[in-house]
Length: 177
Image (cartoon, rainbow, N blue to C red; front, side, top):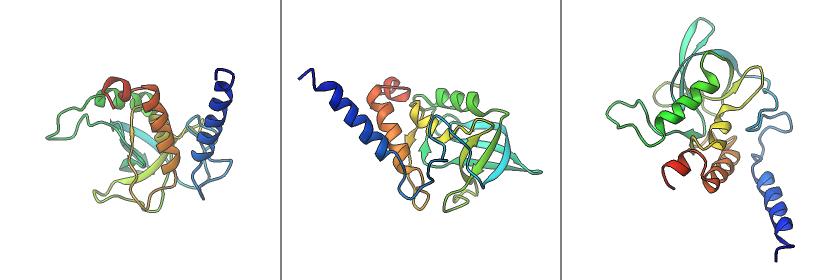
């Protein structure tokens, strides 16, 4: 059995990689959790403030906009009337480390705004092209939150969250499953 274990692990890793690609999503130039390249399109912005783990205030042109990261949900840390959730402060701090004051590219999915008027976006950090939505999932700071029709990276985010949970990274090790 021990001789087969490396081969089984290799097959599982290959299958996980194949499943993490969003069907019909961007091809080889798309950014992974590790950050390959920023896609064409979208809007350039600068992060003015990180509100919490999945919400930002950005400057776009001369305007300020509130942005909600698509596909993830981080534990609450500043929501009025809601106690700070396990790993909420850590998730907010992680987003701050990744984005505070940085230039970003905001890329929409099917719907440009949510019911609260926030821009919905995949947030690519400049200049390295890191897709922050998937990075927070990979590091264990977020759960997957799929709300149709904004599903471009849903399977990739779900796979990254599963891997973080299985490894006990971030909130999955600190807050239980």
